[in-house]
Length: 331
Image 1 (cartoon, rainbow, N blue to C red):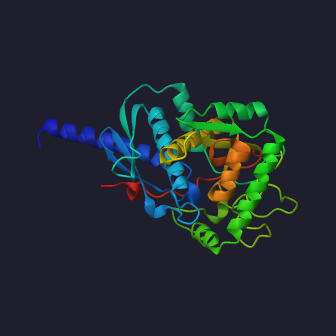
Image 2 (image 1 turned 45 degrees about the horizontal axis):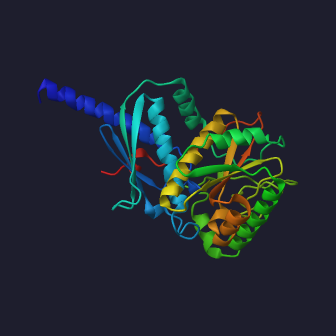
Image 3 (image 1 turned 120 degrees about the horizontal axis):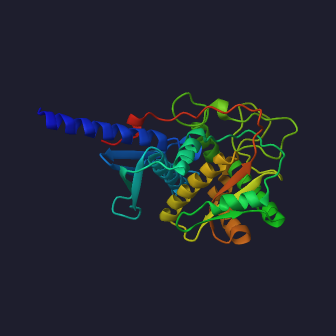
């Protein structure tokens, strides 16, 4: 091999190493049940995102809404990682094309790193799904409004639920959705598949919230084993903030953009030392989802977010496991 070809090969290997690092950072994105339902293909200067339908929750998510929200969050994480490591991006969305699983492309080019990009990348590395109960300090309506204004994804609207009537109606619908799922053994079996494993996917037992006596108003969807708290219970207390992410249209493109909005809002919250817990059950049951749309949100709701303050004295959680990069790369 000539010296010039060796130099060219070395540059290509360096670029692909950079792109692998971007994939590693993108895969830190949140996903439903930590299913990580994405695959990637990399070429020098190009990253392509694909849906991994084998990881779709066919009972709770038969249409693939949660899967595409998860993929959208990972795609936004990839763009944040690129900006924070010295790359500009040009994005092409492919949803609705002939290959239904090929979702989007980002093309990379060298670019200076801004202070904002550095802050966003730091937030990406710090972000956790912390299901521990929040403090009783309320989230001011102004802070919820600021978070909502950070959402700029196409066709996605972030709606703070500050009105008492909205909150009460949402709580009633959430309870209805939980009862519906609790009565269907298929939901429980599907959820159990993704809880308590020791591998690089799903939700590990250490990330689950044990039942706490006297604390019945804000349990997470997931609780630890052999607890008194009903499984599948998900609610926000009076001091928590709640934001609904909704969309003008209700189609796969909207779901993907909603995932991008989720990632952007979550990173903004992390920078502001706020904690986010997604609430999806009321969306997963079609009857309660339609009622939420007509009675509360006024648009097609895609996911609810619980917002609160974690106690300062608590240690930071370790990251939940992620699949190795080689496992999510297509040849």
